[in-house]
Length: 520
Image (tube, rainbow, N blue to C red; front, top):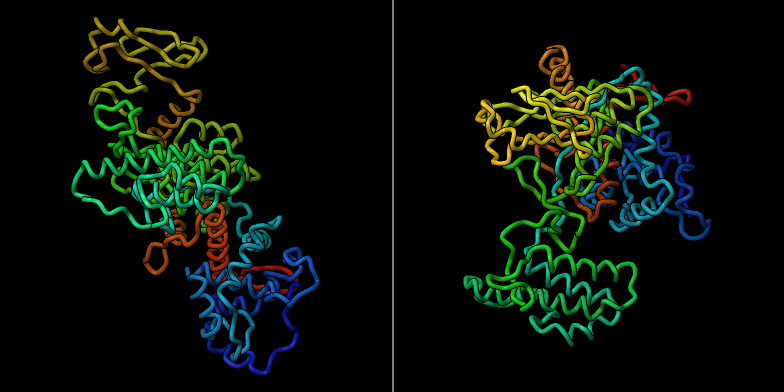
């Protein structure tokens, strides 16, 4: 059953005895005075539908603890210790000085109850309600978008470790798999989690081991192919099939049918980096900055730093790209906005979505690359959408195909400007995006309107400060503590809620006469 806070204070109430030691204007002092207004018991009643059993920790207390945990980036064990030993935490949560706190597993229990409820992000929703009531965003039409890579909570596994781990997972989760492993898997003793003992400096020995493990994996998948599976068992077998193919290729001189394999000389697209957390991915924010983990996307009001939307996705796949998620943020907004983003957001699809919704795009255009250094770019070609043609710098006109391609082909052979246009033997080809008109206009506006560039330089960088607050603490880059997109997305929701709340507290947030107001 749900526990509720008592109206009277205990004899050793921390706030009454040492509350004066907690700095005014801090998160601890705010929660001490307003946690029940921010997280009323009625908002959490559905988590405990039964009126039986021992009362839970009061919702206002646990929600405050989850906010503090996420804000300070503590593990469950560190959080339980802070609630037991740190006077600030006791004051913030209304505990007595001699309160022994709770077991760390209580935090897991609460997060699981929230995740499986109809409103899994109600802590974030509560803070958003406060933001709305204060009116801090009223009349502010700007939104800035950005993303960052957050390191996952697991170690990246090499191919051999993944194959062994995936087979062991099938053994644990698929009914009847143990017998099939004993029957068809002969390349390794899969009762042991460690790597096989071979001469790792010998390429032939490594390839022989890879071949044996891949053949075992394929044989096990084939042996269980007709088994009716669901849930974790079905996922375990699918994961084995995936890791058996993502990192290997036929050995030299093999066509893949003779059972000889080797580690592929390239990284597979959308590669699973760990069987412990199959959602984690290889990614990079730049050619020099390669990481493994998840991508955290954020939309914020740049003048106040208030986060208006957020989402954690896997770090690979076009559906998880910066512009794709920004379109989701765009669809969630009411009213017209000016959207600020760097060149990663300068796609035709996102510009089209912004234009169709009547918003304004203040997005740095993607730089154009010419096939020949210093030569003609696509902007040197004239596009006539009504006529359905493209005209090159030498006044040669070609039709636009149904797939929006203009091919100059053989006409380039005798062209006097060929050396400035293309090095292709088959001539120049222009591929047009469906929203090519918006892309061209954006590049013209960026060049011709200094006020647009000035607005970008003034407001867009502010979202980088928000990203820094989300992704780091005390100068240290945060590392995710959870497995899977869902749990890490829930963490990001709590993180942005805590940061928004801290932002508002710094502006004098208080609750009086039943309403949330700001001093400034």
